[in-house]
Image (cartoon, rainbow over all chains, first blue to last red; front, side):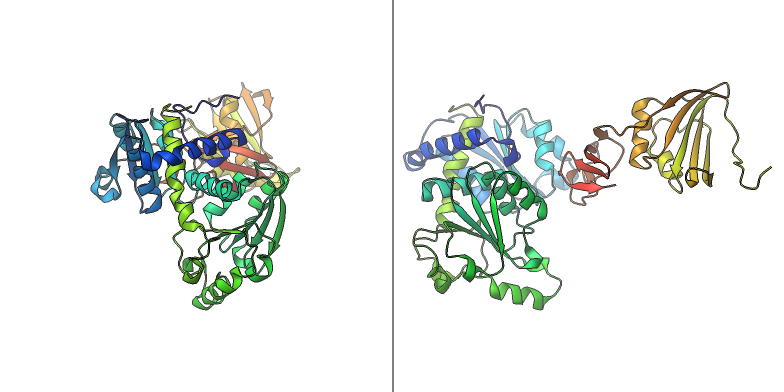
Length: 310
Length: 145
C-alpha cells in the first residue's frame, strides 16, 4: 500500500484506511518530544489558517503545531476582515491563498466547503470542520488519545453519551472505530438524541457489536472509554424537554465511582455542564489531555502532507 | 371520434417522450437542456390504456441524445422515448438513470456549499435506482426523489 501522504488533502476520515490511520498515529507519537524541544521540519513553510467560523482548539492547535514544526502561519479567525465581506467566493479566496502558503487548514460553515477548497487548491487542504459534516482532525486526535491512554484500540468497549444524533464528532469517531477489530460500542442517549440509524448500520456492517441504552449510571460499569458530548439546547422543541434530558445526562463524582478504575472519560469540548467540575481532578478524566493531543496529531498531518516526514 | 381519443398532433421530425406520469410533464420539460428554441407540444393528463392518465412531450426537429433523456428517469421512470422521422418511429429508446447526475438538480440540504456558491455545478451519485436515492458530491447528503 502506498503510504505517501505528500500533497494529499484530508477532508474526511473515511478516506483514510486503517493502515494510514495507524501511520498517522505513529508519526503523532514521534511528534510528542518535539512539542517542547521544537523542530525545523517545516522551516520556511507557511500554513494558511482560514477560519470562516469561530474556533478555539482547532485553530490554535493548528497554528501551534506549525510553529512547533518551525514553520510560520498566516490567516484569519474572523471572515468579516476578509474579501468574503466584499462578496468574494470561496474558490477565489482559495486560489489567492494557494500562492501565499504551502498548506491550508480551513473551517467553514457550509457542508462540503472543504471539498470545494481541495478542488481549487494545488496545495494540500486539511478540513478543520465543514459545518456539521466532517471534522477529521478531531477524530484523529480522539483515536490518538484512546491509543495513548489505553495502549490499544482493538478490543475496547467504548461508550458514547449525550447528543449522538447531531454530534458530528461522535459519527466520525464511530466511522473510524469501524476500521478496528473486536470493538464494542455502547450508545447512551435519550430516544430524541439516539445515534442515527445509518451510523449504527455502518458499524454493524463492519462487525462492531452495538448496545443501545438510556441512562449513564446503568451503562458505565463495563466501559473502557466513555466519550461524552454536549447536549445542545437548540435541538429541543421546548425548554422543559431540554431541562429534563440535560438533568439526566451528566457525569459527576458519584457516576464516576461506578466506572472501572482504568476507564477514560473523553469529551471533544467545549462542555457546558454535562461533566461536572468535581470530575476534573479524577485521573480518568482525560479531556484536557485529549485537547492537547491536537498538537502532535496536527503536527504529524502537516509534516506528512508537506512531505517533511514519511 | 371516440370521446377519450388523444387530441395531440403528430410531429414530422423530433423526439416524443411518452408515458410520463400524469402531472409530471412540465417537470420533465424543465429538466431537459438545449430544447429552449424548439417547438414543443405538452399534453397533460391525457387518457392512456396502460396508465389511465399520462403526460406527453413532443419536441420538434430535435433528436435527443441518451445523456439528455436519461435524466427524465429522475422525474418519471415510466417514461418512454421515441425518435421520429417523416412521421415514423425510427427508434425506441430505453431510459436508464445514469450513475452520476450533474447540473440538473439542486442539493436539498440548505447548508450545502453548492447552494451558496453559484459557480459550483451540483453533482450527485445515484446510490439507488428503485427507489431513486441521490447523494450530493459536496455535502454527501442523501435524499429520495
